Image (cartoon, rainbow, N blue to C red):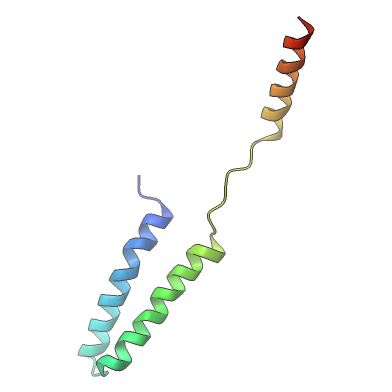
Length: 77
């Protein structure tokens, strides 16, 4: 299954090559097209790092309570 971060990793080189190519064809100099494309790539990286940051899943409180309850039952036996 393709996740969000897999898509971001695929879009980074696609943005660099695609936007640079389109801007070059549109008449921009290569020294202008590459930095403009890199701004988009850095934006993708920033979004993946700070907006949708990878976090560890938080355990549900009910699961913790059940585990504590089963531990206390085992110690009573």
